[in-house]
Length: 134
Image (cartoon, rainbow, N blue to C red; front, top):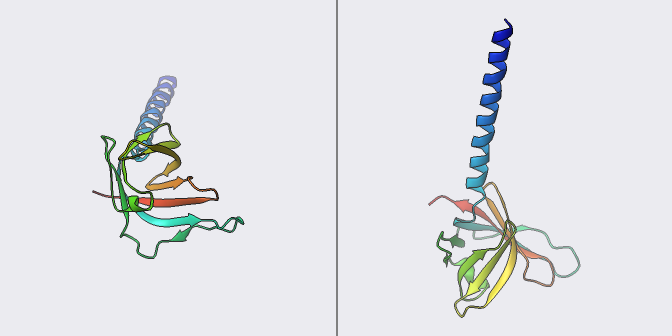
């Protein structure tokens, strides 16, 4: 009986560790900025702290695509100018690069299939995207 308890404990531990590793793999897959993202919300604060995230009227029309090779594509780039590339700096900052080589950093956060990009304004501002299946 004692051996059976040890065996159950070992198998349970093994299953827990395997499940945890698979969960972490899924989290890593979902945490990549690479992919196509559809704009769903924007934030623009007028300077008094009253800004709120608001849904985009033309949902599904604007998108941003981060290619694995560092190229940017999409029609959401118009609000920033002539952006052509990006470079992830760490797990919360990304550099956007203009065609002429100028760069600027913005903050980003990925939560499951949602990408939020903030910064670049004197007051609070941002864009929220959802992952679009290719």
